[in-house]
Amino acid sequence: EVQLVESGGGLVQPGGSLRLSCAASGLIVSSNSMSWVRQAPGKGLECVSVIYGGDATYYADSVKGRFAISRDNAKNTVWLQMNSLRAEDTAVYYCARVIVAGPLPYFDNWGQGILVTVSS
Amino acid sequence: DIQMTQSPSTLSASVGDRVAITCRASQTISTWLAWYQQKPGKAPNLLIYKASSLESGVTSRFSGSGSGTEFTLTISSLQPDDFATYYCQQYNSYPITFGQGTRLEIK
Image (cartoon, rainbow over all chains, first blue to last red; front, side, top):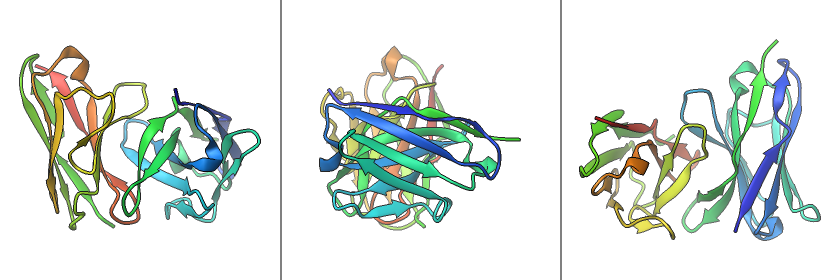
């Protein structure tokens, strides 16, 4: 059974940084494409970043240059480094396993989510 | 960017009803569309991919159809567990985009 467990969220001031982690079990992170999808309070879903099998990455325009996705194969973990945080980054962040069976991915396994609040 | 528009935004229905949710893309996306169910405080759950393929483990009461720019998620014989919010997602071109959601509530 695939399990994805996010951690590292919390309250941060505007301009600050946080690093989210996603610990995986039941799948090998190095053999899969992984992503972060966020959901602002009461709002819809936004794909923030994807890391593909060959380490190619994708970032939404809203976070490009501020966020960085990476993985630690030894720890079977995916990271999201978030810098220069803004109030509009406030959201629940979900780690999700990605299936690439077309031009782009969809998401078949999700973590429980972690809340990031950017506020002074 | 491809805009995904779902209708209706809210749908009231009763247990046993058959309901349909529509998702329209602003440009053609072939059949590169997925549907998710989300319950309050929980992560989304994949229901359908490639417009009409049922994800493993998902009840066959859910079905998807459509291609190009218009897609439908149909739930036959609603059960209490089906009352949730549903999202469509296109994976034809960047940026990956989701619909705004359809909240299915008990009448």
